[in-house]
Length: 211
Image 1 (cartoon, rainbow, N blue to C red):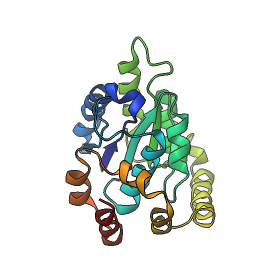
Image 2 (tube, rainbow, N blue to C red; image 1 turned 90 degrees about the vertical axis):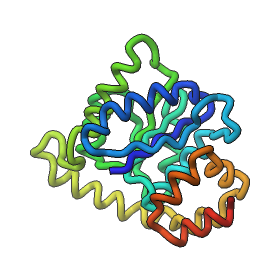
Image 3 (tube, rainbow, N blue to C red; image 1 turned 45 degrees about the horizontal axis):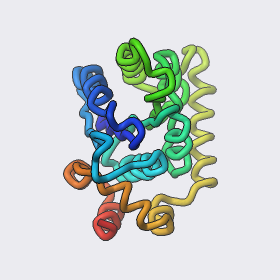
Image 4 (tube, rainbow, N blue to C red; image 1 turned 135 degrees about the horizontal axis):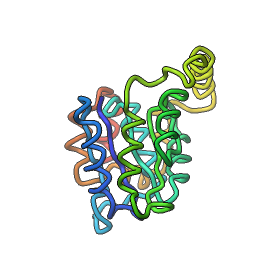
């Protein structure tokens, strides 16, 4: 699985800690991590939590990533921004039980963390344990296990509802503010990672035209 990491500007200083912790947990499981930044608060390309949502949608809808780890000060803004887009199902993840139950019950493809609120002594340990539970095995298996069938059914219902309540990704990209979109895809390593992994030619060509 290709896992993308995205940090917005207020928590950019924690990017290396988050990335190193994520890699330590998921790389032994056979997953790849692509760090889209921000890498520091001084980065030329500054991402807001809204742009984290835009970038998340581009990566997931294009197939450049299978899962996105993002967040902001509280995690709430990033979660709301991600869920504004089609084919993105983002949970607000605070602790290991959140990570496990979101993966097993909701079977989402993005997680938004609070990287300021409650991020104090032992925060890196909580992050490590939460990543372990989020990526501990095949998602969507249900929790408790005897609830698996109705939970899987509800997930499919939600997916179908989102198809009705959201425009398709190309409509979104063509109508969203062009400067906002360009800022979301102007990160230092975006071109290197995205174009090597993108599986959707239409999205790829459109992003090239924006850049």
